[in-house]
Image (tube, rainbow, N blue to C red):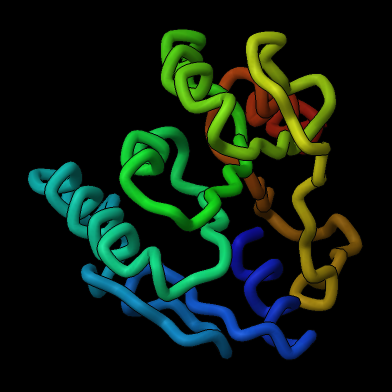
Length: 168
């Protein structure tokens, strides 16, 4: 989803910098502190996260806006920078993280990915559903022996239900 957004901005002629892992494929300017996905650094995941976020925040003045897809942690630095931060909230891993979003409600800008996945404690600019580049996927005839599930594994995302449907 972040890739589709980034590549769309680049196609529109908007100067875009993507802060992501070094193995990311993009037409935007790529900035990275980790060569591989953060999940591949299990012992040092928090270290990698901090280096990634600090790399952006220390350069915040170079940008007109920061579009955050990294959950709530970058918000904790938003009071230290002048650059506006737009955060797309991709869901709540637990209700316990909402106080962090709530703390920055007045100074940050929030977008939800669905109208049903919101907190009444937060103020949202709008809902922007996740987009996919459909040309990257070929719809099969159903005679394969696999299921492609595209999403975060979480009880609210329906992975179990998708598997049950595929089995039927």
